[in-house]
Length: 110
Image 1 (cartoon, helix red, strand yellow):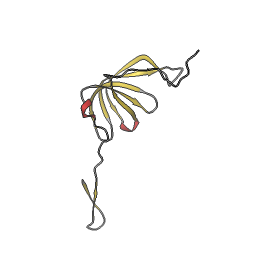
Image 2: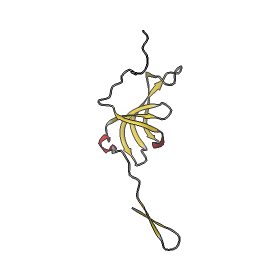
Image 3: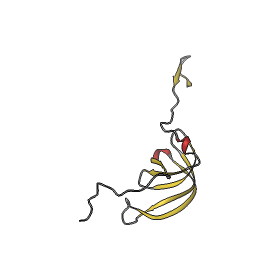
Image 4: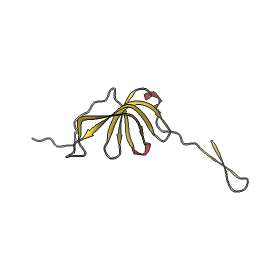
């Protein structure tokens, strides 16, 4: 706990913010990160902090379709070492054991 000097001799105690996620099991492993705004990137998790700021190495960004910004393409762009701001992170998942499935809520052309 952190102690903060208040007015006079009163001391206030605050709890330190703890991360709700334990990302330590994903250190040095490939993860995929989705960001607010639709961007996606994959890389090796090198570090993180309680605010969910991430450090990824050997990072590749999955590019979006220029005609439809919500559709991802198979094209990628190599970024290298990246620091991801925690406030824009929406989803974190391991690359191993992940597969894309078609959206079951989109009506198929009959």
